[in-house]
Image 1: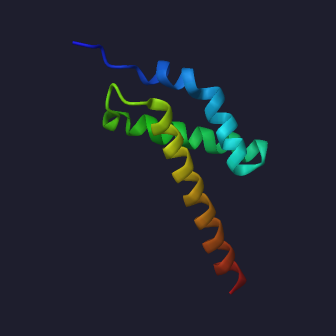
Image 2: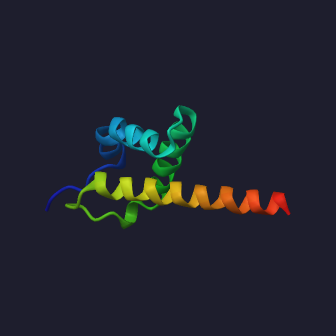
Image 3: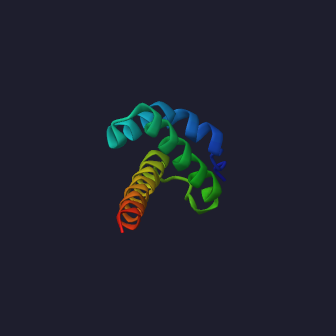
Length: 84
């Protein structure tokens, strides 16, 4: 029976690429760090849903992208609300 991957080891192997990906999305170093951290936190909370044998990097990059989209939507709503 194959051992299940640990979150720490999986995250450690993709962390530099995740930070670069976050920076490519945000185009701001501070926002990129916040985004990568938020994605890692969300992935940690839902790691029980990760299927061993699938690609962790694809899974966490998808989470990162979704968190970024949610952030952009939130900023737009907040901006529209403040303009009213």
